[in-house]
Amino acid sequence: MSATDKPSDKPNILLITTDQQRFDALRCSGNPHIFTPHLDGLADRGVMFSRAYADAPVCGPSRASILTGRYHATNAAATGDGWFPVKNQPTLPSLLTGAGYQTKAVGKMHFEPPRKNYGFEHMEILQDYYRYMSKHPHLGVPMDHGVGQNEFVPVFSTVEESNSLTHWTVDRSIDFLETRDASRPFFLWTSFSKPHAPYDVDPRYWELYRDAEVPEPFLGQWSEDPARIPQGFMVPNYRMGNAHRFNKRDIQMMRRAYYACVTQIDYNLGLLFSRMREMRLLDKTWIIFTSDHGDMLGDHHMGGKHTFYEGSCHVPMLLVPPCAHNPGYDKDITHTLAGTSCNSVASMADILPTCLQLAGATPPDNLDGLSLLDIASGSSPRDTLYGNFDNIYMVLEGKWKYHLTTCGGGEQLFNLADDPQEQRDLSEDPSCSEVFRDLRGKAIARFGALGHAGFDKPDLKANDAPKDGAEVRRQGGWPGHHSRQFPVDVLH
Image 1 (tube, one colour):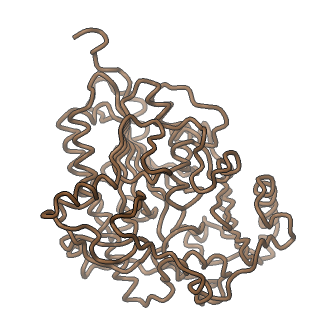
Image 2 (cartoon, helix red, strand yellow):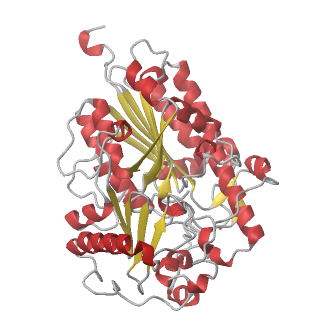
Image 3 (cartoon, one colour):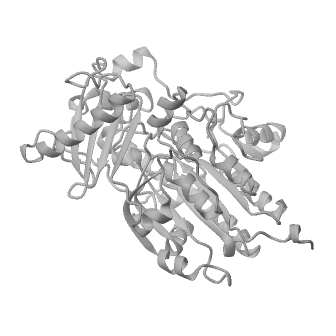
């Protein structure tokens, strides 16, 4: 073997993302009602960021933040490319490819356009799975049930588990590990499309939860009656699955199907981790696990995403160093991180600088993200996180969260330390008026400078809100119906 053929001493990096997995959909996060043994095992070996947030809790914008290390609002203002702002910027895979990494993407990327590789040497995306299945009809027809991508009702999968998209994502990831160029370190992004709706669960996983106890949705004094919620916050729910129409049994079934989708991912990850262990790759691979955003799952009469309530924007995030039995591992880092929890705020934008630090590569200028290693060590705490998608905004600072919609106007203030389920809106509490004015002023300064509508008005109102869900539905909802011929990487 020549010197150029020797394996690199740089670590491998495995980024695992799920789609629409809320922060508490893990056993290791304190939820005793869900089975996630392999992700719990990652938490035992690494650090859990208990306050990780999506600054734009929607699929494409979050993935743009992962790619660029910049917040959605910052990116959109800089590039003028609103929904997927990546234009003319260095990306995580391009930077790692330039640093000598073999780079591969498997699963849901949701790039725009779908086949643009943004620096990856090779990609296998959801379209490839559906093309493969269409050529092998004896394996079954996936998504042959008619339930849309934003409908929250439970439904059974129309293919066997071994032919599912979840299993395919792991299978293709393993294939890459077995056939890669072993003289180069790798960056592999394994990206699952679940538990994003439709919750079309395999019947065998449904059986695990069929009679299981699941948590009740959170309701607050401000959200008991959906009609009294500022309607700008309700518009995303009206456009998609209309979870406000669900009764108690509906929500239980929805949550069971959702949990089953998470467990299916976890059990399939067991196959990936087992193969990595056999190949001695866990000894030299850093693993990052997170999700692009969460799912309200009936909390406050809402489903899906888009808002900055905890269920929607608070996500799981784990950073896991190489296994401790590797003779060359960094004992200080591994022992310091193993089984720990970090309460500093983390974000999607932090993934790029973290990976570059692990790879020994130089980060680009003007990043919003911070290295998760530095956040975990306390050397780079984040004081304030700003969030925005469409006309909904957030300022998160310490224990306080300010929530705003400029669609019809509506402001809220929550103390997450005392009220982690956001059941008490303190925006009109005299004892919190100073905090409210401070965070409101920061939102005006931040988003006003970026040119967002409504921030030049005293009531922070850009346009009128709909009167109710019926008005939104008359204008056209978005249940996410697609045929299998739709040429966009969105079928879940």
